Image (tube, rainbow, N blue to C red; front, side):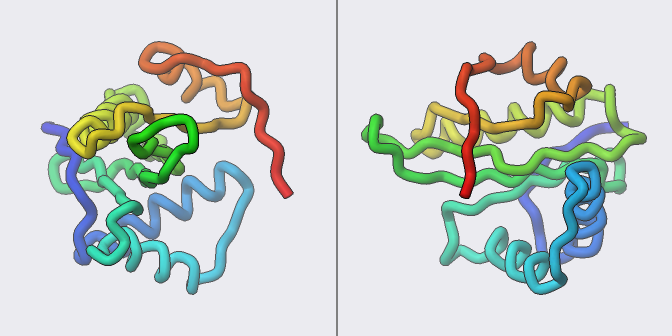
Length: 146
């Protein structure tokens, strides 16, 4: 079956919610319904052009998602792109869907004039890191958070 990467549409809300819930479960996180509703609305709202989302669809079945955010950077004139969330369903892992989602973000960032794309993952996420090591450069930065 053909894999398609496309922007989210209003009709995708239930499938998107299921995929994002599974992604958050991997990171042992739950969010209130209000966050789901607000995030989905922002991803579709032209008044929020910095927040974006794509869905990976195999045949007619949504199998993955990616969220990415453009933002200014003090060391660059152009914006940078933060790939915030990436998830592929367990059944679709190893099929190229994760790589296709990241490459779609790369293409969108290039079209936006934003050549720098970055993301974070947990050090124990070895399956995803095998892909990341092939298509990006690992940096030495460590995240701190308040």
